[in-house]
Image (cartoon, rainbow, N blue to C red; front, side, top):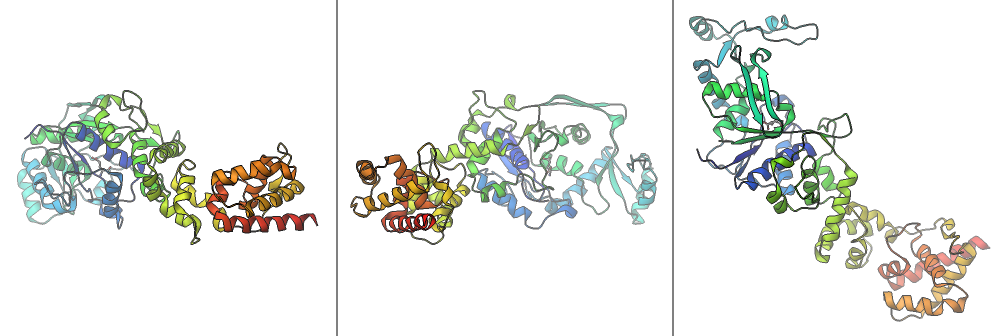
Length: 483
Ligand code: GLU
């Protein structure tokens, strides 16, 4: 066996991928890559009842979008495959039988009724080891007779099973607290408890990285490694991500789904960066980091022992930082679909709009709403013209919009500089302040209280013709209101 690090991500196709699942995969990836090792994808689909149509494809898609690439997986066999558990069925039976021979497991023929009878007042049953000491002859006879059976773990008595978790330190469980649980079910399918051990061993996994829900069952799995005489892997259990102080994120409740964030206009690299920080902190406390930087900085010491709360506002902020750091062309390419949605088939200069949006949104999906004024302009609330500090009301606005029309109609140079100069040079002629014209003009051009830029920027994106048309329309609205 080579010594190089091999980690794996072992999602179950039982729904979409929430941020917590993805973080587990990300840490396994970062750890392997930080050590120059391999990262493996394994699909754990033995829970056929909870299997969700399309979930396997979603796993591939998510990893691809997130930029987490695996060295081995269902479509990249490096000799350790198959990498899908249902394609490994024969193996589990073979190894379960081997474990029986080695004294680490036994056949159990107890039927449903008998197990029902073992239930306590809470409906929980602990297996009473009824079949643990059946004679070899009896077992063979019953197997030959075709009696249904399961294979159970033969947990050694009177031992303490202990291991050193890389995050949580020493974990120990007394064997009297471990049930002789089922390893191979009567339908021949393995339980997770067995499959994870067989697969991790056969795939030469050196470091098992997964959620804390497995922290305390790991001593039980280790007893299986021991019974086989296999080397145990090292373990890194990760504290959960919560949606608030008391509730974990849950895929059953549709929480924090990676693909939902993508369709909301988050950038995959920003999501991945944010989730890396949910439970891990680099030594220098940096926040914005690329995958390469995270790989370089990743270390187990930085993994937190306590749970973290998923904070969408923080992720949004980080996404905004990514947008601001983009070059103009890159931003244009990313924003284009959202800009197109915003202009809704109208003919505007998309480059100009991209420039306008670049520093004004934290996530791209804010764009259509911010551009709504371009395609949706109709009679609006004239109260928007009230501005006490600037001494603007509907009457002043009527004069200001009239002045803007006058000034702009004869303007040749329809540029930011040109418009700005023309208004500031001429405002006095109309007994108005430049600011009063600008303010009134912005409302008149957009019909919106909040706009993604000032009057001049709005005039530029709308263009000369549309701007003049809107100013005329607004002048008429103001006149009608005063009549
Ligand atoms: N299929 C398990 C899960 O999705 C994987 C646990 C593990 O990584 O061992 O929770």
